[in-house]
Image 1 (cartoon, rainbow, N blue to C red):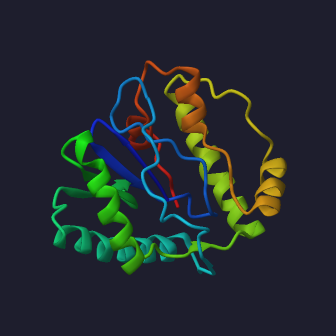
Image 2 (image 1 turned 90 degrees about the vertical axis):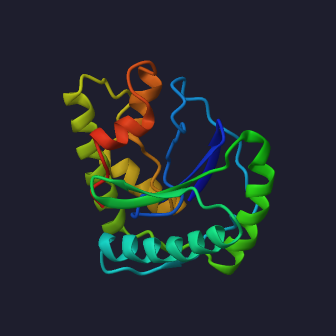
Image 3 (image 1 turned 60 degrees about the horizontal axis):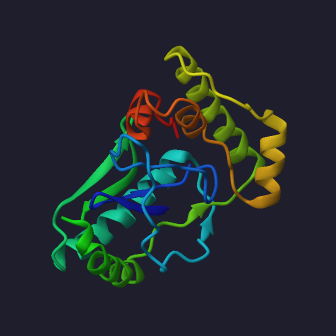
Amino acid sequence: MRMVAAAGIVLFVLPACSGPQAAHEKDAGDPQGDQGESLSSVEEEPEHADYASGEEYKQAALEADQAFLRCMDDVGWTDSELIYEGGVYSGFSIDAGSVDQVDALDADYEKCRRKFPPAPLPNMTREWAELAWEDQDRARQCLEKLGYVVPDIPSKEALIEEALATGQFDWDPRGDARRADPGRMTYDELLKACPYAL
C-alpha cells in the first residue's frame, strides 16, 4: 500500500492483489497528476500470506483497514472514505484538512498502523502473476477502447518471469496511458473507467 498526498488529501491504495508493491499511481485529484511526497516511514517490508482467491485477499484488506480507520477516527481523523474500484475494495482516503496538517496525520498514521497493520499481501506465485497479467490486460483493452494508446506493452511471459523473480507485478497500463496523454483523464477517473477485476 502506498500513501501519497496532494492538496491535503491522503490516499492509501492497495497493491494489485496478485503480488506486493504493484505499480500504482494516485494523483489525489490533481489535474496535472503531480505526486505528493510519501508521508510515512511505518511501511516496512510487507508480510505475505496464501489466499484462496482475490476476493479473500480484498476481504482481509478491507477488515484490516476498517480497524485502522476506527483508530484514526478515535484520534480525530474523521474525514475518511473507503475506495472501491468497480465494486471491489481498493483502499481508503483521509482528508488531512490542509497540507499544514500532514505531519500530524503522519504521526497518527504511524501509531494506528502499528496497532492495526495492513493485511498480508498475497504470496507471488505463477497463478497470481497470471491473474494479475490478465487483469491488467483487460484494463489495457478498456483504455484502448477509450482512445488511449498504451505504449511499450510488455509480453505476458516477461512480466510473469519478472514478477516471480522480484516478488512484484510491475505493470500498470493506466499509469502508462496517463503518462502518454496526461491531459485527458486523472488516474482516479481511469480507475473508475477501467477498474481492477481482482
